[in-house]
Image (cartoon, rainbow, N blue to C red; front, side, top):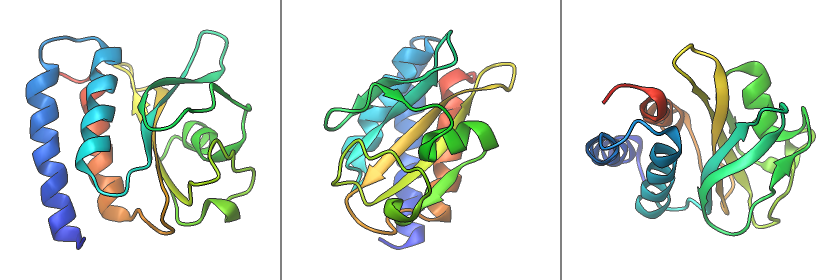
Length: 156
């Protein structure tokens, strides 16, 4: 899918998410809706969901779509923790080449992680999407997903 087609698809999904999540301010409900829509509307999304920082500072699985997930990710290891610690999106073309990659599924080949910020601007979670294909994600995915995650805590 070319960047322009992909961007248009994301924009349609953004509109759908925005119209649905206005019913509640609950970040959990919003994450659930966002994960479901992205997973079912975007080609090649093998695992789509959120990991959040709990009260103990652990990164644990939240709402997701796809096969079973790792329930808790080893501290400061892997792509999700890189997104938390660096407070920026991570686009990984080949997860086998990422130092400390956590393989919840051996079928995952590439990954994108986008930080989620609360009302105070603090990173409290990440959107994590895996694909079975190498190099499945690019700057278009990053830019559009960064817009999407603002809906989790943002005004609608």
